[in-house]
Image (cartoon, rainbow, N blue to C red; front, side, top):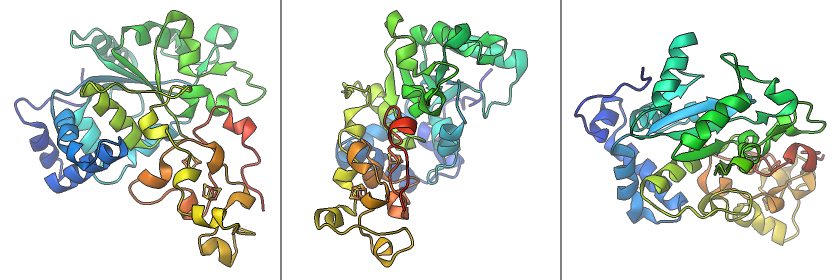
Length: 315
Ligand code: SF4
Ligand code: F3S
C-alpha cells in the first residue's frame, strides 16, 4: 500500500504541474534550497533533478511528540508541501496523513521497510526509554522497539525536530519517561542519525538534506549532529536586528517604539547568540521568522532548551 501513488511514466515536473505547481514556483523553491545549502543559485537545476528523479521511499515515524513538525511541513506555502514533497518522495508510511489504519497501516510499514530499493527513515519525536519503553506504544509495540527494528535497515536516518534530535520538551526536567533523542537512544547499536533541529525545524533544511544525500554530497555535521550547511552560524550572526545590538540599542519592552523600529530583543530574552540555525536567512514559509515578527529567539534548535534557555521572555 502506498500513500503517494505512483503516476506511471509522468516526469516529476509533469506530476507537479498536474498538482498546480508551476515550473516557475518549483524552480524558485529549488533556488531557495540551493542557496540555503550554500551551493549557489546555479545548483538549482541539480536540486530540481534530485526532486523530480526517482522518488526515494520514505518511512516517517512518530514517537513522543506534538506533531508540530509535521504541521510545519504540511502548512508550508509555495509550492505546497503536499504537491512538492508527497509527489517527489514516496511517503510510504506517515501516521498523521496516511489513510490506512490498523493492520493495513502495519502492512504498509512492513512493505516499505522491506522494499528492495531501500528507504529513508525520518523520526519525529523523542524516544521514551524509561520502564523498557512502556511510556509510548504504537500498534502494540513500544516506540523504542519500532525504531530499534527499523533504523538499522534504513539508508539514511533523519531526526526531524528538536524532540527527535535531543529529547525536546519530553526530556525537560524531571523527564519522567527518560526521553532521549533518536541518536542517543541507538548510539550503542551504531545507528547514525542526522539531526534537523528546530521546534519546528524549517522544512527547507529537511528537503536540502535529502537533496544533498540524493546528489551524493558529503553532509558535514557539527558536534551536535546537525548539517553545517544549515546550522553553521548562530541566529545572532545573521539577524537583521544585529546592527542595533552592535550599537547598544536594545528594545525596553515588546510594546515599545524601539521594538517596532527593529531594535535588538536581547534584553527581552533573545537567545539568538547561543542558537545555531539559519532562520533569519531562510524564513518560514519564505515569509518571516520569530525575531522578524517581534519575538525573541527561544533557542529552539539547541539541546535542553526547555531547561537551559528559560525564561524565554523577559519584560
Ligand atoms: Fe541577536 Fe536576538 Fe538581538 Fe537579533 S534580536 S541581534 S538574534 S540578540
Ligand atoms: Fe527557533 Fe530561534 Fe529560529 S526560536 S525558529 S531557532 S529564531
